[in-house]
Image (cartoon, rainbow, N blue to C red):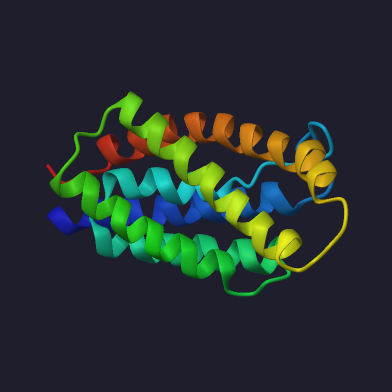
Length: 169
């Protein structure tokens, strides 16, 4: 009986990731701000990791990373590896060491969204030797980081609601 809520919660998280993937990859569905769209699956995986233990968080990070690599990235495996590892450690940290609060979630969301997007930029543009790196970063990636972070705030409240309403009693 108690496992039923856990299964429903995991199904709800999976549907959320699927819907966010569809929102993110459908052309002209989300507005572009300064030529960039948010990467919705990064904050979704991070906020799921706040509420779940490390193993389920790792699998949701893996699923989000696979979707991001297939729909956004030319580097297959970058987001899969980084989100899997990040979500594992976020789940571990929030289970054992930190209290889940809005300010903690805000700080981790900002840090990991910015860190993963900047790391992706470094690997795909700077280390690849492409030109006009600073121009491209300032005109496309800064707005993508901010847009992703703002969407992450909304996803925090959605995942908090799902966790509280579908947890084992």
